[in-house]
Image (tube, rainbow, N blue to C red; front, side, top):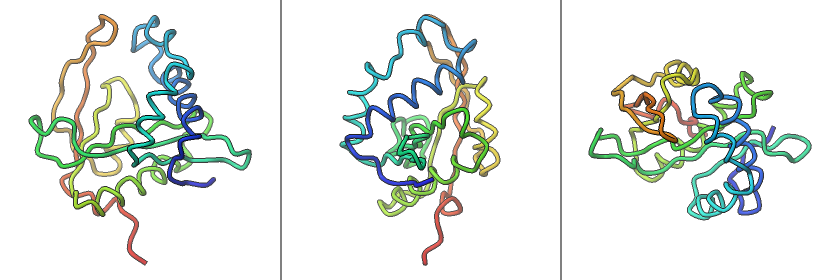
Length: 173
């Protein structure tokens, strides 16, 4: 499995992984209508724009398929918490979960954040999403709980944070 910086031509694969993982992870949590409207085609353009900005990493298997991705950048809600950075997304196809890929995708995001002078990070996760245990296992602390609306349904979202992300980085060689 190769982990590398996303390229513009990866947008369709990233969009496909996002849609697949939302439909497997959030079925029964997020309204069905919202999930049904998500398609790789309608997410592709969004991912092209995000990839152009940078800090998106993909996991690519031997068949050259994108099996997971992670993205991060500056915190989008510094008014809520003083953390400098945010893990925006980390999604891995269901069949590829539980193999250490999440950690491998997180590392280059953290390294790039640190190279940019950021040392703390947030991540937002739906309370019913079991991926929160992944963040807890990596030392994230629960900072807050907020309510968000998706397609008319109110959901609880947890905000986790790391005050010091250096422990998530790859040691300098």
